[in-house]
Length: 115
Ligand SMILES: [Zn+2]
View 1 (spheres, rainbow, N blue to C red):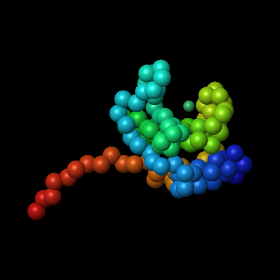
View 2: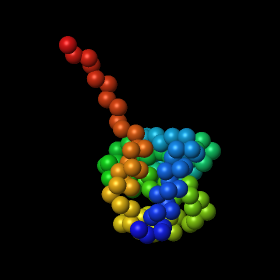
View 3: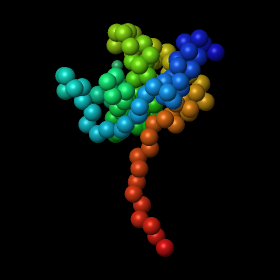
């Protein structure tokens, strides 16, 4: 397996377990400074990854990968992050993607108890 994907996956799982405080789905996510709409946002102060609630399941996973890159390769410019995101999308195995996907919270429905 490719070294980049292997390292990224190992680091990501470690950070999700031990460093990142949470992943939150949020409606109408915007850049705090520019107010531009965002699909994802890493808050290094709160250690939270925000993901736009209205994205498709696949887009949420892509966004998680993108934001994890910001955590891991913090100082890389956005153009580099985007380039690596595309590479990782092809390099990560289905199993690795599924394991990362498990950290994305599901939309919680309140169901009435029926008897
Ligand atoms: Zn970014």
